[in-house]
Length: 350
Image 1 (cartoon, helix red, strand yellow):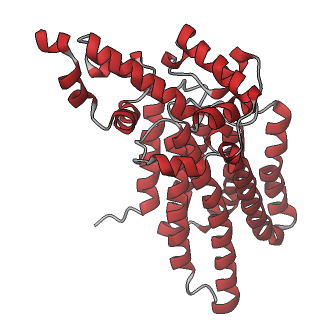
Image 2 (cartoon, helix red, strand yellow):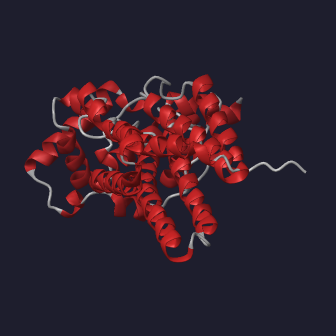
């Protein structure tokens, strides 16, 4: 029987995800290029892990070390591009974050005994940086489509803790070699692969491949910044009213690519101010607010037209049917089909 290491299966799965991203173009393949590169790097790393631990190609450790540090840098750059002002990382920032893998490549030649601790430090540092980035909640990812902001935020959290877990796994492996000549390393490596799988799933989720888990309103409220707990000001009310007016007049919620950054630019306001105003006045996140409007529009289309649900998904501003169904159920308590059966006289008459 042919032995196929699990990492090879993982690599094949990730290659399939990349192909689907390229063929579908969800969210624009070019816009997701950093996440595509991240998934490609993990696919390659999975192949290297399979060759090393499945077939004993130990000479690949050098490439693995450089690629591991590159993955941490790519993860930060990818999620950083969704935060802040929504602008993609500049050349300087990209260059600075490519210094760690370049340094590891040099140290492998001049001081190989130092790369182990440095890789651990790199994983822990980037993991902590992503945890810090997540402190603003879902609305902090201003460049993420509002149709999938919560999913992107979940991915950010999982990626952060996966990097930290990878660093701690390497610590455990080093300690095992010090204390017991590596007798338990195989089990530790297996655990590390599980952590890597979580990270891969997060990256794939952000890229638009995969369905999000069901959520409750309480869970989303727990992730929203503490702005809701503060009393709304007159300025908050003015901003919220401006958002309401803009949505009513321009119907921006029907734009599947709408994100907090675009909305804030239309109002000539900082994204943080818009987010806080919606949080405090409407007691919900911006993504919930916009999705509520989209569901209202979907209800109108379901009741006034005979368009198929698959068309209404996009007309209402949703990018994926899975997210549409989830949000529709959250708002109305019913599925789109069930709702139409009791609210669509035109469809019934036809």
